[in-house]
Image (tube, rainbow, N blue to C red):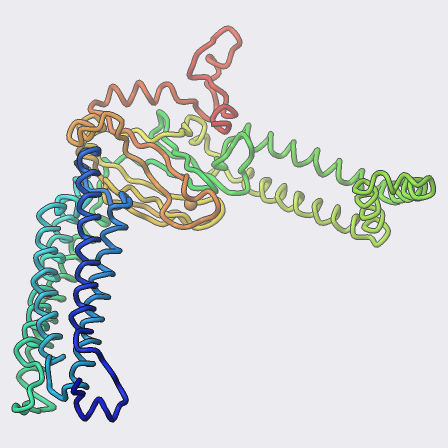
Length: 495
Ligand SMILES: [Cu+2]
């Protein structure tokens, strides 16, 4: 067997048919795995009907096998390169040019990639916006989105084609020298001015649309308050006076979740707080006696050996005694009293302001659903109780932060009823929702409130009449009148 000089130097002994053997083995492996995947895929399509809608979560074993196949192909190519370079070292001749191979792979990637992109847009382009806009301004927002998408898509195609075709055209060749320049005024001007014009167009258009959405005054718009808290939403509708009354976080209680300025609610809260303060003060006055009592109980427990049987009870009692004897217990009581007294002072200050307690909240309705009438303008007013939340209504193309201590607004006019949306989607169970779009805590994922858009004012009126008022009217509140509208606010809070 004649071995070339170079290989002799490298002390390599390669049998003549190694290359053929390896290639044959790899090829048969590749074919076998391809056949396996294809037969699996065939079996899968025989059993499972092809999916009607695009579902990125359908990640089954066929996909996994395809991935394994792709990995094998990459391995085969890598091995082929190894064999090629080995053969080059042995024969001392250039067999393949890595530059040419890279350039060709680039071209293949370009063609396959672009075909994939256009196929994707053709097949799933209708999901680009997820839903048809269900609000008046939504259409202008969508058109803005499509313009931006159009520009960026055009730039994407041009740059990718240039990148890969230049890579193919100008790959390294020994007999050719590359042109070199480090500055070109014309190029600089072109790639500065063109993006500047396009971006100015997009930004001005966006600014214009946003101004139109948020700053068009509409006297007829009905105001609805949306209140965010960990973890849910409540809505508030004005009563017959068409006015949403004042509110404050100080007035929030179990039966007044939105802290509305309602006389009876404020008085009830004052009563509760006063009673709690009295109870705490009694505890504070008896603190020394309590301490002595707990100490003797602890001593008894320890002397009788019961502390060994009731370990956790003993620990709790011991902690309590230590707290009491160190004064921490009394301090805690004082702190609680002070906190409640401050709240009482705040309530008294609010209570004395007739412009806040102006009876406008009395007929307000706090609801656990939002009902809107098609083609009617609305102004949403958002408040938050605890942390920042974000009211997100995707179908209406509306989103606004809800910030504790301030109120934010977002106006829109719904143009599609829930029934129409159900029909156009072919989904009888579809509902509009307002979601929280700020990670606000553990149950954030489940923080939503249903929005129903009805076709007529009368449907809305029927629904509103069934919602409880903050203060049930005097006639309905009488025991004889078992009217459904006279539900106590407690029932609202419990919802
Ligand atoms: Cu939230």
